[in-house]
Image 1 (cartoon, helix red, strand yellow):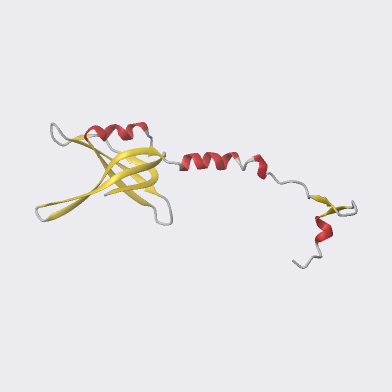
Image 2: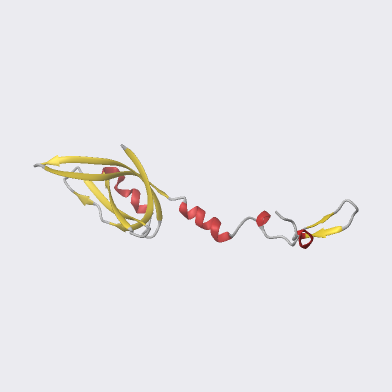
Length: 130
C-alpha cells in the first residue's frame, strides 16, 4: 500500500544502526489544524539520507508504505517513507505573496458609449432592477 501526505518537518532523529547491516532513521511531520497531528515516519537502509536535504520548518510531501508486523503477540505499525519532496505549498505561498497577476488589478470605473454617442458610467445604471 502506497500513500502520500504533506506537512511541516517538525523533528529529525539521528540514524540508528540496529545491526551491522541494518540502519533506520526517523522523522516527524506536523499536520496543521485545530488539533495538530505529529506523524512519525521511518527511513531504512540507503534511504536514511533522504531527509538530510531538508531542515525543520520545511513543507514536505512524503510518499510512504504502511507496514505492520506481529512479534510475541504484540502488533507494530510503521510508516515506511521512500520518497521525500519539497511540498507545492511553498510554491503556492510564493505566488500568494507576490500578489495577483497584473491583469487582475482593479481598474477605474468603466465608461461606455450609448447608441447616440453619449458617454455613460456605472452611476447611470444604479436604478436598474437587476
